[in-house]
Length: 400
Image (tube, rainbow, N blue to C red; front, side, top):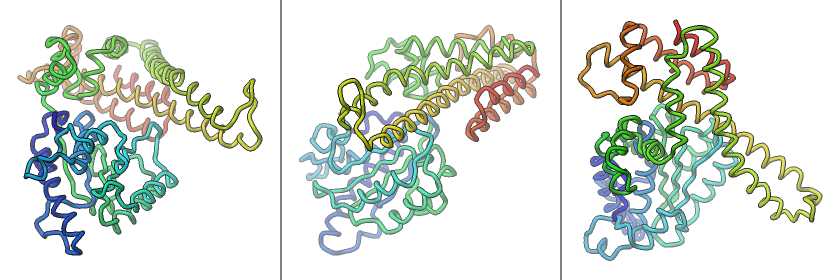
């Protein structure tokens, strides 16, 4: 299995990255000889992967990192880098390669402290003699200060360090950073391609795979979760019933409260699964006495851990709400398609009766206003408006 096999529906991007990985060998040889890289080289030290959620931008970055570290004998004979089987590919993909740092965050932002540590890591020579690769999956979450720290490292890169940044759109990254990166745009994978992956790789029944791929509009990870997780299907069903429950003020407020409560429950489940073990591991590492009493001087470390866990719960709740709002947007997009008699297939065929009822009882202009209300709610959540207040405002707007 080649490293590119998980990159679904991105043939153009795969071709560009494979060509750059081939030129990387020439780049390394030129550097070792003290010569500049060839002018026509497709390899460069900083890349920016953008694309809508589910397009696989982080998957593309990890696949490219593996191709750069590929040590397959076929590569020396002109084969395509990224065999998927050699030690370089395997350790990169599972996250244990000494020269590949994959950074993702479960918090709301990436700060200066964490970024300085990455920059320090980027200055090291690769232990394996090829490349030092930093994959930053959430470059859009860099604070302004962190972005300025990263900028200097990209402006003055170490000779064999490669930065692979991922963000939803080019506007989510500082102009000074994106201007110094080679930009690759990924598209939303076709529904058929996503369904094929679910069937072939995850063993999901064809009917369920196609239904999940349609419902998530080509979002690979969400499609897999929807096809395999009963709780995910139940949450989606609740969200898609919301448009039928906002006929009066009481219904609006109740629906908003239930949506926020469901997101808070998701955050609580994550906390129960992760926080307890994380706390116990930290106490053990700090030398807690029997009964849980902590040594002197460790209160600050435990407080820092608690703050991090609190921020993670906030991020989890926000992500859960955002997923619900994405499903709700898809519902009204289908309503609009029915109202305009579009020939495009609807994504939420399992609730067609509800779609047709809403489409029949309203005009396209009203549907567009409802979609705008959902987008405004997402924007409000991004600006740290209290979740219940933002969602209540949205459900009231859906009623109008």
